[in-house]
Amino acid sequence: MDAWFHNENPYPFVPQEVLDATDSVRASLPNRYCDPRIAADLFEETLDEFLLCDDQGMNVVAIEHHAGINSLFGANPLILGILARQTRNVRILSLGTLITVRTDPVRVAEEYATADVISRGRLEIGFVKSGGSEMASGNANPIGIVDRFWEAIDLILKTLAHRDGPFSWEGKYFTHRHVNIWPGPWQQPHPPLWAATGDPTTSAELGRRGIVNVMVFRTVEETARAWGAYRKARADAGLPAPGPDRFGHTAFVYTGDTDEEGVRVGSKLLWFLNTALRSAPQYSKFLPGAVPAALAPALYTTKPRPGVPAAARPAAGLIGITAEQAMAKGLMFAGNPDRVYRQILEHRERVGPFEHLVLASRSGFMTHGEATKGLKLFAKEVLPRLREL
Image (cartoon, rainbow, N blue to C red; front, side, top):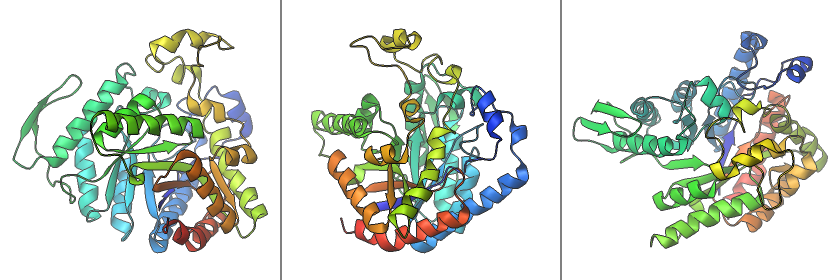
């Protein structure tokens, strides 16, 4: 099993009375509450943690979100370029440029190819459909997001893999008369591909394409549905059964010297779910196209009717979660090294084998010192045992 360090680089220093008064901590909150001096310190600490991972042999993740306290990594390509140049050994996963928000997939491919060359072939590409607040802040149309997602991927892959001079693209959402990027990627025909989704329909298409399906803060049941759809789609298409290297799981992880320390410090990670995910209805359930038509009537009910599933973002149900609840659901692994290792094994038994563990290991008011201590202890005491699985 591989481990990937994931840091959203959130901004937790907005006064609580301001957070309580705003309808959404994402997209709507004025950026006057973000002190650039504090932001600079957070960037420095986060980048130092990425470099520590390079020393410890733990892969890293360059995330992307926009216009909110949950993440300062809106300019993902800049972070990706820094990691490509400053790290030397580990794999770098861009999870990822929000391709349904970006208007030019060819430019995205160009950024990926450049980072792959600078890193000398250590890049992995992750695709994300985007959240509602990203749709608003990116001035993107949420209608047709799924079709736009797949067409953007197809155009990016052709741009990365094409070697024989200019080609043209005439699609439903994107038109390019002259595509011929320099340089192409280091890895041929393109870097490995990931996508973050728990939607069974999307997971099924990932299965047909052989793309790694990483789950981000999803329950055992949601994971089982998505990965089951992935396996079934491959079987129905007559393709080989996927190995554990096609699946990844994201969880909050903190390793302490004792169980008490691990859970106490690790609980600070839950700030991300309990504070930084709050989103106004116009960015979530009322966003046009965000919910399948069959579920639309449930948007306007306070209590779902029998037999009608609730129409809400999966993350919405995690707001207010406790450390004990998060650990029971496999959303957090915390404690001393032995306990963290056992929790990971137990979750793996519940959802099936997966090779990629993405560690959300810095959030909220966790200090830089606490984060680096947890990373070092995990890398020394837990990671070698996971690699033997």
